[in-house]
Length: 232
Image 1: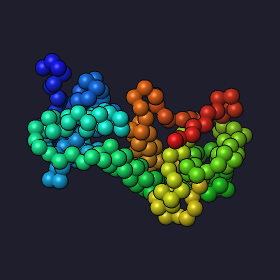
Image 2 (image 1 turned 120 degrees about the vertical axis):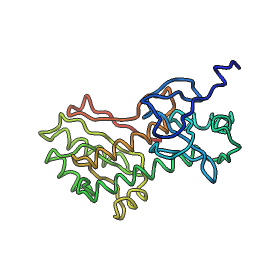
Image 3 (image 1 turned 90 degrees about the horizontal axis):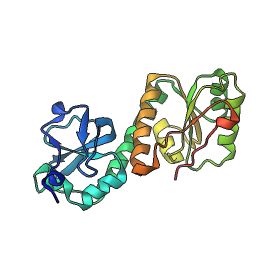
């Protein structure tokens, strides 16, 4: 291993962070939005998702497999210059935090009146052309999403692009929206919906392997352009 390979890029605090950092695992320079900052907390390594925690920070690509590789190679202890405790389930911990952040954003969007819940209300929102995203529970079959996609194509606003979210269980959606048995929901235009979609995108980015591309899916008005994503 060369001296360059052994160097781990760190920062002295959240206020000394530039627009790009070097991933300690892949050795590639990326925008900070594509990285996760980790710091040493009293109880061990802490994911600093909002990049605001004090202390020395180490930067890892925001992918589950890369965080797992950093754990395997002991990069956190070397980078943070301390015999800090590193949770063995750190990748899972990061994912749980990202799920919590996304569902929290969905809850805020619902309270702001930017989420329509239930098949009929989603259909109505589509007819009004206010939909920027469709949410289907992971347990939803093919019939409901297919009918809603067809409704979108039939609408006079069918050429607009709509993001499909299908990564949360019905139980998770129930908790976020304070409703029971949520299977379908629609995101209406607004800042809170945009915030949720950005957080969901962060979660999907983390779950996806580096070479698998972006899991964001948009469906356009024409059936030929329509694409549906099944999230595993």
